[in-house]
Image (cartoon, rainbow, N blue to C red):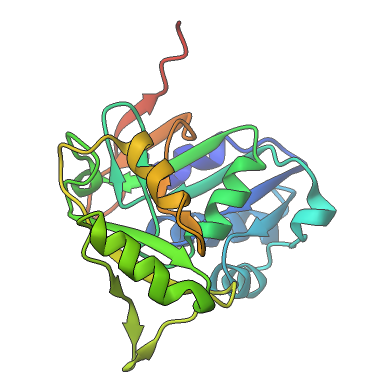
Length: 226
């Protein structure tokens, strides 16, 4: 069984779900489309990016806006770092704000990752994406630099990358030991910051697959005991 096949088992019939971004999430959307077209699964999706929306339309998954959908049963997405507490860093695919909104609109967040995304502590890969409004870019860069984060505006084809929300992305340098909750609040306090790639306390299930073929290696669930 692959992590994609296991994720499909966690999707209830006739439900409305969030569709994530990235390689593993796209594999899930393609597999979901196969089942929708075959008539074996009936679902509607809310995409976390324009790229995911285009893929979902291509493979035949019906889409709704978040306003039309209301609360979602589950969101299936990927991540760039997963620590032992199932806290995440996301956003290397540049869709972090919509990903967080869709995840927060869901009863359950299921994350699909390869083994290489597992880290002992958040910040191990050294990068935290932060989305900022264009007008606030100079201030956000200055404040983040003062925090020691060494922000670098993400560029694509030589130009500042513009997110689906019309904003810029700053890649911030971080390294363990980092107190994620404290860091998140410090960054969010900067005027002009929209959100960070820190997804703390949001994932309920993490499905870990082999890097090459997504074969299920491990299923982790958040410990909800007090």
